Amino acid sequence: MPKRILFLFLLFTIYIVNAQTNSKATIDQLVSNYIKELQSRKIDTICVYESYCVGSIMTYDEPLVGNKETCIDDLTNEPAYLFWKEKGKTFLTKINYCWEFSTVNIPKDDFWQIYFSNDKTIKEEIIKPYEYETYENSKKVRYRKLVDHSCHHNFRLLLKGKIIEKRFDDFALQKKDQYSQESNINYEHNINLKSKLIVDILEKITSEAEKNNTFKKIKSR
Image (cartoon, rainbow, N blue to C red; front, side, top):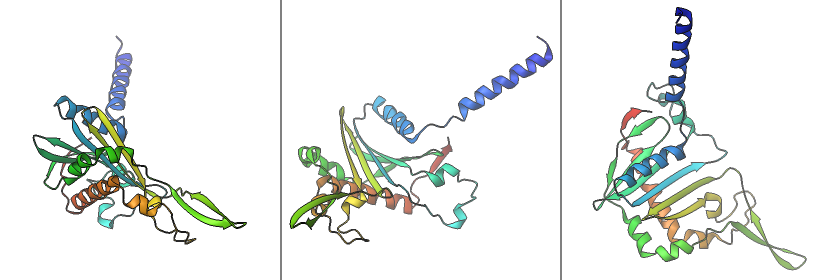
């Protein structure tokens, strides 16, 4: 093979390898891969928690920006969190585009008990949208209100082959619209859901873990 053709062939091979190595998996794919790995170890009690905002701007302390250990995806995409029960203990890890993180033992894991004690109720719970009532022509009329820049808190439970998912929009949890002051008639219903209690616990655990720098980076992806 002529040297020039061989050189071009090697360049093409390196390009293909680099393209495959640097291909970016989505958060969903990374979570799915981690779940498969857990299930291969016969773990069947798993929870995925996500907390993110749409149409908002995230801010960071100045020292974080430009830090050699910070990649751009770390600044622009929210991570997912995985909880699982193994040998009677609950573990937690963080998943994002940039890094693989260590696992953490979570001693306060009462969200499992809340679910197992209320599983039938939680399965049937419905998070109602923001609705308000007003009078038009002496008749009471109900309207639904939506926004495109709210924050969301979602969890998905994978329990022995069953999947239970609940998705909360912060706007549906507001008592009143801060601009129009219209009262949300579904406020009391939403904040008293058993699944809302689970979301609150998961948010507290993950927020405290982030605040305390609990997640340790193992290696970059």
